[in-house]
Amino acid sequence: MNLRLPGACLCVLALMLPAHAQAAPRKEPAKAKAAKDPYAGVQRPASPEELLRNLKFALEHHLLLSDVFYEEKTLQRFFGNRSARWFKLPRPFIRNGRLLGLDGVFASAGGETTINVLYKLVPEGDREKRRAMIGIDAARDARATADTVIRVFGVDGRVVNPGAAPAPGTHRFGNKLLVYEFDGPQSKGNLNIQITVDGGIGNIIAVEEQKGSTLAPLVIQPPPAPPAQ
Image (cartoon, rainbow, N blue to C red):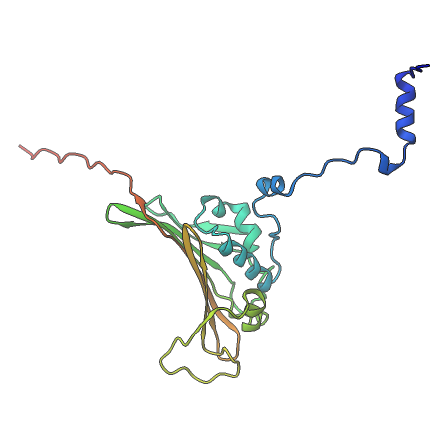
C-alpha cells in the first residue's frame, strides 16, 4: 500500500534526520576563491619580516609588472602604507612615487621610512619593455636584519661583496649584498639586499623586467609648419 505524506510532514521528517544525513553545504573550490582573490594569503604587514614575505610573494608570482598591483588597495595590502604620492610626469607610461605612512611596519629611529616605486616602459628602438623597481630603506629598524632575510628567503641567494676591499664585519653577511633571483616565463626579477657591517639591513631593491619586448605604438609626428612668408 502506497502512503502519500503531505509536504509539511516531509519537511518535519527532514529536520529530524541527523546532521550527517542532511546534505552538507557546498564548499567553494579553492580555484574559485583564488580567481576572486589572486592575493589570497597576503595580509597587511605589521613588521619588516611580514613585509618581506609579501614582497617574496609578489616576486615569486611576478606581480611587479601588473598594472593592478599599483592600485592603492593592493599596495596597502602588500606594504602596509597609509597612502601613496605619485609625481606628475609628462610621460603617462611612467609611474614614479612614494608609499608613505609606514610607521605600523617599521619602527623608525629618526626620520620617516618611505618606499620608492618606479614602474615604466623602456623604449628599445621600435620596441619597449616593462620594468619595475621598488626601493626600501630599512636601516632604522633594529628588527630588519640579515637573519630576518634568511628566514624569509633562505640561504640560496648569491652573496656579493659590494666593495673591492670590504671592511670586516661582526656578522657573517656583514657589509655584503644578498641577491635573490626570480625567473619566470615572461619576466625575470631579482632582489638585492644590502647588509650593514653589524648584520642590519641597509636597503632593499626589488626589480622585475619583461623578457620579451613588444612593438611600441606608432607615433605620428605632425607635419612641419610652412615657413613664414
